[in-house]
Length: 314
Image 1 (cartoon, rainbow, N blue to C red):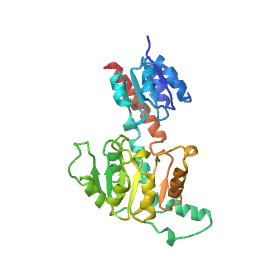
Image 2 (spheres, helix red, strand yellow):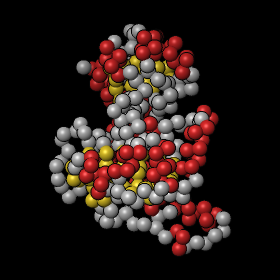
Image 3 (tube, one colour):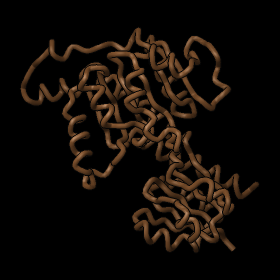
Image 4 (cartoon, rainbow, N blue to C red):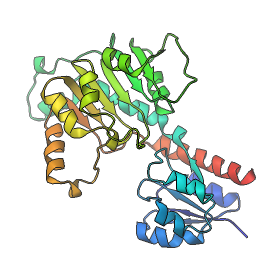
């Protein structure tokens, strides 16, 4: 009997066609509501998800025949990993697939912020030809701290080559980072916070990292520095960030993620905080699209196809 796989989100045809060619029965339902996925999953051997499908204990209990969950991308905070392991469900993710896209996006936001591109564009759109107010700041000569060195951290470091910057890296769990070379200097967290002009967060969301970048974190950062977060919104406390910006302790922020990414559900406090951030001329916010490129869509599909086939082969 053919293994049945349910695909619950948009994927490159390379994945769905590739699975069919390998003998799998594929049901491609990118618009299937979450409640229907929860009901239907019991009939499948594999399910491929993106961030809209939360694989909690209830979901996993319904998945009585599931061999694996395939994650488009990297974030595994939407899956109850301990319970999935307990019930014998394999987790297959593809963090390599969008690492380059995230790294490019982080660098793009940073350069746009430092050179005031959005502010200058808005000026010209209003027929204001302001030069001096839009004088930029060069990245060259700065120290960039990277917190987290799994997939996107090294990709970001690679993008910084040629920018004439010093790179500091801290990763609590990775032990195989080169201790010292021309590009990467491994340091402890306190040195990274104290020395970096720019800090970029590249961490998964876990109990340990939830709200890690808070008031205490910002207070230990160098005065006038910039924070970048392209990982998960709940890692960074937006209220504390707004305080750090309005007090001029930080000089800017680049965010691709927020704690709550559904504006129609924002509380009164969230509206106040997020509007406060959006009103700052030294803040760039994008709608969780750092890893969202045409190339990453194809690469994620290719990697996931290879890993699923390898899983069944083994």
